[in-house]
Length: 373
Image (cartoon, rainbow, N blue to C red):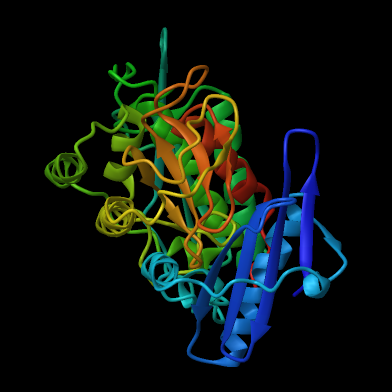
């Protein structure tokens, strides 16, 4: 069984994976221990191979290094029925995260994006709209019809890149999306943002998607109602930070069969979030994690899973970016953490949802993700 190890001072653990036809088995734990084993099956050998290669790539990215095969070690114990059930329950169809984006359809022309700037004696607006390889801008004093200008580019991609650039310039000059409230929204949980800031972040994401990943952009769902958000909070027994609530009001995640917004990881809708949370809770209540111990980073509890960890993304393999509403000492409620189904690493990736989403906005704007065609 191929073996990978991570020894960096803070961690000293191994991970093994063995591919066999339409399934593979992983074993993981601290170096020197027997570890825990899980098994997962797929509809075809090709899908099993894709997931195998993806998991290996993830481990290498996290700093694991290949070592001698584990054949000379003690035989891997067969996964118990309980452990098999745990993996099966949290592993939704792999196609969600690994689906390659299909050839892009003809882009539809979205409505104009409007921005306003009111400072002292200045009260003006600016609108921009992309239509194929053309960009039309309209600008003037608020309350007037303004004046318009249209510019044609060599391609749709060039037009959308220019759109992203112009929007970024306006935001930098102090323009804000029309209709955004003037003041931030207060909240009981650290969130680091108000309505205006969250709308600006999503504007950057939408603009970047239009320029670089239009197929992903089309997968964003309409915003959820306040009633739907409250219903999800009640089902889980938590109150979301204000920035998370506002994000759901803007976009209720992605369509379930879409290529993931977060570098291939799907942004979950409220209904998908609740479904995955219930799956993890059923496993926790059933005792599946009783003998699991996590290696938590600063400010994160060493739980395998916690009922106040809210899954916000999904990679198709049982792993999530989670909103942490139950931090350890040194952490902050509302921080974002990584939660792996077959690895004990539990680390903080951002101090708030806003900080995390701003990082995604920067990556999308730069076209930093590679999406298979």
